[in-house]
Image 1 (cartoon, one colour):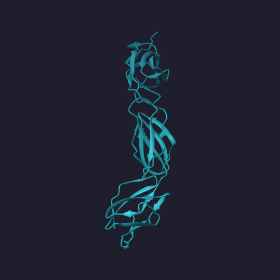
Image 2 (cartoon, helix red, strand yellow):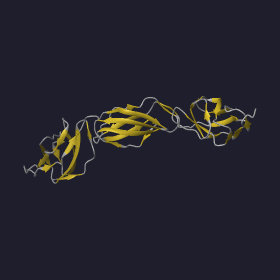
Image 3 (spheres, one colour):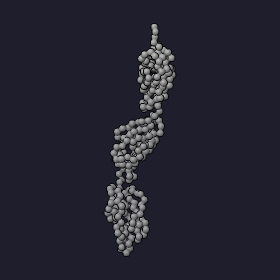
Image 4 (tube, helix red, strand yellow):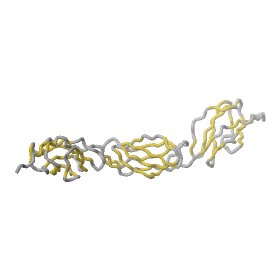
Length: 263
């Protein structure tokens, strides 16, 4: 007798095994393996071992006794492991939205392959036992509540789905536009300035100009520019950062000159 290739099967306590016999006869089993198949024919066989407990099986053997009572040498079955336990997957630690990605910490009860379902995909396909960081990607801006992760182990056992919950993705930067520039020449160190923004957020002023506010709301905003002294102001600009940390392109403030009042 000798081994032959077997189809992969390990479910409901059944493990597939293939062998070839030179004669028909009766099969006997030894070790920790058992099968309901008792009769052997001449040629190839595929039998199903019934395994009742998890663990490593390394002492299984089979023999065939022909009609004349001749018994073959034991055929040692290659060792195999049986695992019926589904892995467990849970969220731990960080859950951070970055652009169109969510960085999430997960904990796996055993090593395996990650499966993503819903409107998301991931950079990590295989995880080790323990904690790992996963970057989950979404196709665009919007609200998503159908993304789930599952873990499949080497034996084909699959964990319960791990839902990410509701995820709000906003990767679009604000857009700023000048509405009412400062007059070319002025006599005040607090000139009025108007601009509009597509999103609310925090303002940052660059150049020699500062602002009297550090926040802006969607739509038109009227602010005062704070200047230190008379002179030309041609290097001023504004950027806005929204609540998702998207930053606008700089809005260049049209140049102006503060003229010292001679009176």
